[in-house]
Image (tube, rainbow, N blue to C red):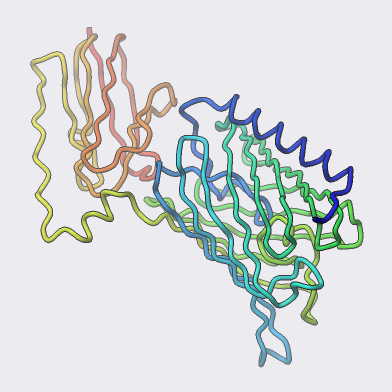
Length: 363
């Protein structure tokens, strides 16, 4: 078995301790982490409903011979959340460049992503992985801090076998995201391996989109790096004559269990309408056809509002000031909140921000 460099052992020990700290510190309910908040060469933990799978298609390429030849480095990622703080998955890359022995071969990175505390001002997450091309246990800690329209992102990485050298290694990246609108951002990062230090400086620049009304993301980017594994993003590209590669990434959640079940059912029963009960202690609001009904609801202090999702899409009921909220509600899901003070309480659906409504509470 390959002997791990003492610096690599210390680095991996630090990654393990940080991962345990992430698990211990993370609250049960966390704010969502959107991939549009990060740079192309960093790896934040995913935010998905439990057991909901997702797929990422990442394709980096360069044109040579006047555009007559294409060098392609595709990566496909599959993963799923298995709890509120843990996701499992893999990255599969052809045309690997991790080590001299693996250039042009296949590379698989099996990973476990851990979510730490997160919110509007920042987030912390970690990744533990095994890279088959380098036969290496890898780890990363990713941190994000936001002030106004700018997010700063930093990532520290450690490898038990860095780039097939037989020794442990370290790498890191720093980047920034400029949030032009809620759905549009410019992002870039710079990184390198510090041990070994012969892999060169890696950079990326990107324009990223979040599609309104969905949890899909898309980015176009340019880079001089390899595939989107921890070791691939820590070194300059190993082959191809062009100094820059271009590419894109597309993030697609693959549906909930209830949505998959509808595919195989011969016919689905129509959701039952929910009647409002304005004369009782509980008042119900329908979520149907991408709208809250009624959009304006008047109740008395002490009454409870119950929301029921009748759409096949997942929705949230989220106070505009984030003081209360439901998390994601699949079809048939319910959420209740009791209002104990008078006032106007606007709320919205996070994945569908055009869905807005208000609860007016009177004495």
